[in-house]
Every structure is written in C-alpha cells, then in structure tokens.
Length: 291
Image: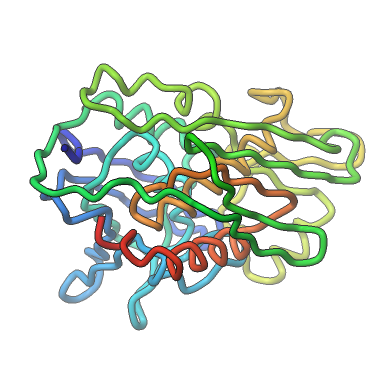
C-alpha cells in the first residue's frame, strides 16, 4: 500500500476572500503518515493547524481551521485540490490568516500539483477504506447533506435560487483517487470540478461587506449574479455554480483524512452542514483519523 506526497514544493501568493489580506503559501512534501496540515509561519513558533474535522472553528461562508487562538480561513479549495489529486501528506506554510482565493476556483492549485507531480510513499499497514453501511444525514429546513452506501465515492449536489441565471441546478461527480504516479493525475476533477469559481449574489454584497466579509472579493475572483444575469460572464460551465458547491463539499469532506466509500448527496447545503456531516461520520467511524 502507498500514500503520496508532492514531488516538489508549490508556491502561490494572493488575496484572501474575506480578510482582503495578501498571503504567501508554500506547500511542501511531507513525511508518510503526517497528513495535510497548515503552519502559520508568520507567528511565533510557527504553530501547526491540522486539516482535520476536529480543528474546524468557523463555517460562515467558508471553512476555518483553528488551534487555540491561531486559525486559517477559506481552506476548502486548496484542500479539495490536494485530496482529489491524491496528496495524502503535505505541509502547507502560510504567512497570514486566510488561504488566497486566486481566481475563485481550485484550477491554479491542481495545475500546480500536476506540474510538480507526486511521490509514492510505501506504508506497511494501511487499513481498508471506510465504507458507509447505513445512511447518515444532517439537515436544516429543506437543506440537507447525507452519506449513502455506495460502490464508489461520488458527490452529487443540488442548488435552487430564485435568480433566473442560476435557478435549479444538479450535478454529480465520481472521485478518482487511486493515483499511483504523476501521469495518472489527469482525472475528471481537473476538468469538471476544479475550474468552477465561487459565486455571489449582487443583492447580498453590500450586507456582507458591512459585516466585515468578502473584503478581498472582486469580479476577477468571483462570479456575481443579479436579477438581470451575470455581471462578469462568460461562465466556464453552464452550471458552474453547482459544480463549485461540489468543490466546497470535496474540500470539507477531505477533513476526514481519507474519503469514505459513499455517495455524498447535498441540496442547498452549506459549509456548516458539510462539517456537521463529517463530524457525524467521524463519530461512527473513529478509525478515519488514523488512516
């Protein structure tokens, strides 16, 4: 059995969506069994924040991880890219409080990972993948997310907005993670999910800005939709918004360490519901944290 890490380091610099702060990220190869974790190199003693469910400290419009008073926000796109591309172990050094939004998607991250490739790391004892045996779900009103028994790991998402340009959208994506060499990383995540950008609603922007959020948001790193349509077309996909929701879900479920074999089905959900489901799965399958 094998795990994988990066064959070389990756660096990116950009502005955080909510903080508006420019940060530099350096992703380094990591030892077998070390998992994916963040290091706040701008702080004394460079505190470590594990990319695990137990470290989630905030889920308002993004996923934030924290240890004590130290945190890092908007981790979902980067973590989705690393996990879906098969990077089990990675040291993510960051010199600020929020992962850069870049172009609003995970495309730059996956391109960077594909460019450096992966290194196989032999392990002597890897447990069998966790298989969901019974449906597990959480909900709030008509929004829900669940994990269903399945033969493969799949993510299906539905959204429904009154704005005609978005409306009701559904999409389903099957995750391929058995990547043994860098050449095998050209999976459907790169073409179908990673390019989908974050999106916002025009009528909500002023309120969010007054609340101290989306300080780094712009028409260059987020799609914005109003009653008359998209302010910054063209879209990369006709259903780009729902594909982006799958990107968020993949990133949040990556906090389990390894993806369970399950069909993750979500409708009008949020980071908060995603994390609640991950917590529930972890309660029923505590071995996930030891994979």
